Image (cartoon, helix red, strand yellow):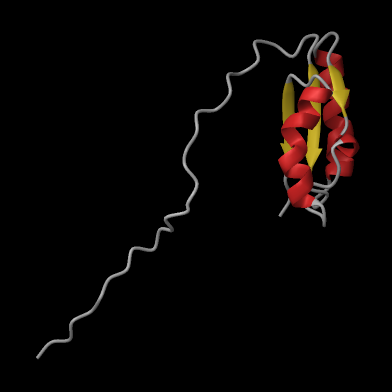
Length: 102
């Protein structure tokens, strides 16, 4: 007699649902761009280079640095990530560059 095996679906019922991305900005000219970082991989080196390039390429672009939003991976991660929409609105942010190291 052959064994009977149960099969279990590996996908969690609590998995994330896909969402439609926000519309792209037509240009970065005159926009306020936030840098958000989890403080894990070289953001302290890369964001200054990116800020320099963006301000040279796009007239009037304004950078709001990652330190304004805090360490999005540290002990206050849940609080900071949950508060990010309000923080972005408070700083009148038009777009975000998110740096996540691994």
